[in-house]
Length: 212
Image 1 (spheres, rainbow, N blue to C red):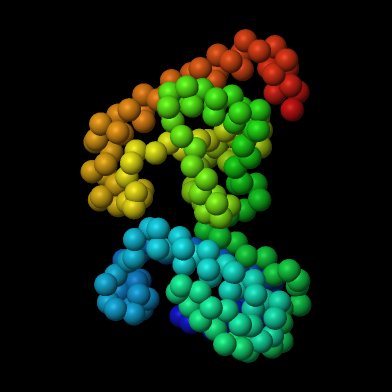
Image 2 (tube, helix red, strand yellow; image 1 turned 90 degrees about the vertical axis):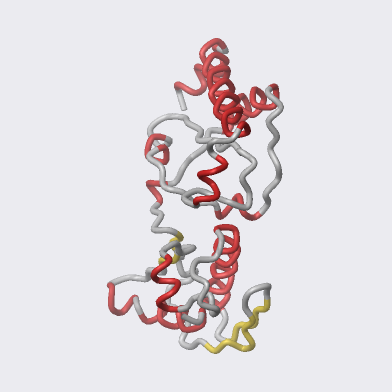
């Protein structure tokens, strides 16, 4: 579906569903990709990194068209010239829900625990690359989101040198039985154990966390 059509439909949907809702995702079902020929070349589902890139651009386009009746946008994947959309949504800004997320499910990473974990992980020669805008748009399903609203928590990720393969792909599964993956399990567990010890033995930090 062209993004401009998606946006126009989203502006009228509130009249049907009782409130403004724009819910989008990166896509994953091969049958849908092939059925709608979403790649335009009949090759099925693009790799995860490409779907993530397209999702980020989709959010930018929707935000632009929700606020500008004649929106112009050009990027790696899409080009819009004076994409006409009128009337604009009544609600401004128009909320966009990515991956069906809800406020209560958002993961809240505690900055104090992050600092301790990061220090311990670096002692094991683990690095923390700057992934820029991707960090703001990374999404996943985890019960830790709910837990983090009840108590201080973190939910770190650790690399196994698998890029450009990501979760739920056969290529990623192959990387999971590699030496790098074994080391990641060891390093992650040890860094978390050291972090738990540090939090328990630092009375000032412990009290701050217990009262937060």
